[in-house]
Image (cartoon, rainbow, N blue to C red; front, side, top):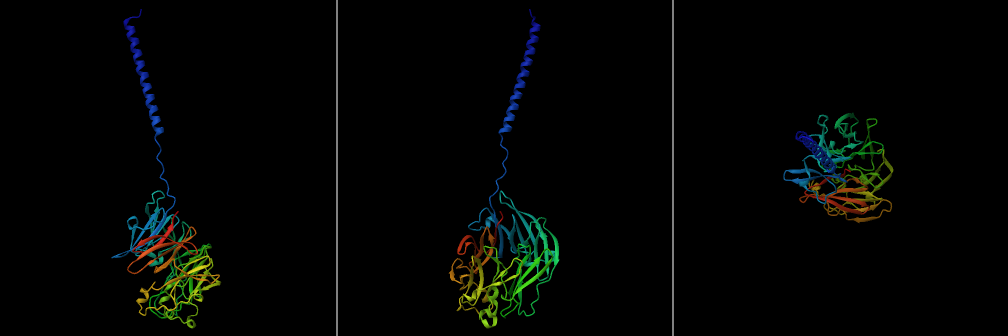
Length: 428
């Protein structure tokens, strides 16, 4: 018979074993719960990337002067809003390459690189490049020519300088001393020239249309023809191709749907006396459109003089070339120009009309897509469509972006009150 002492000892051992088993069981259950909890907790999801992003830059008139804004949106807004845009300052232009935005501050002589978050579209400064020490000022730093993610160029042809910089590191990589734009000994009056719309050919050459702008009124000037500066990064040399068939070109290339480049008459021809009272015996054919080959030479077999088909005193600008059709802004033959120098600037847009002329058939038709605007200029080609900035000047300034999808298919895509839309592009 078991003693009371032995029975007590056994009960104590069972109690200890029972507590140990319960403890182990509890620990196992807790561990399982923790494992289950870890398994069931979802991993944080990566933010979903936005399918597309558009950048826009525009000015807004204020009592203190024009202020420049920039913004990014998944789709082009129908109305640009100051409250959702970034204020850049008074002397800034916007441009873009790849998925990055760049802004040129002409007062500070700096190029700022902006990055865009692919999920939130938040815009932030990534780096700043200063060109002040080299003396690049004014419009010279705007609209650089991008060859790649690591090679871009700006120029000051008056001083014979080409600057190469790296958009990735935002550092100047090389300075090229090149031949400056030839002096015009037969120039009468104060004439400014600009090469601020640079383009890169498929051969990797940088093409820069030179636009002469007369600031003194109103003697006839002859700069010897349309000039096109062609810089070859492979050799570090520049050449100035000249064509006397056009007295001076606009500073912007026009492109058709096949990628051909065209130079059209400058709208500043209205400041020259002879264009106010055209005498064909003296100035011949002042308003042709020329085609530029990809190597920067002029196509000798192509010339289209709009005045052969339209009776006019002034071609104020060629808006677009598409499917052998050219849209021209002009005045009628009986248009009366203001006599005073100051009024010749302020009349701009008053009494202008647009016509569409076919290269091949010479058919002329009225064109109304830009009616009511006092200015229009080509912004660029995006996804096969041409984009134009148009609007009204004077006291009621408005800006508009118009998209062209065919020879006569034009759609207004966005507007801004009180300013001009200077840039629009698709980042991705």
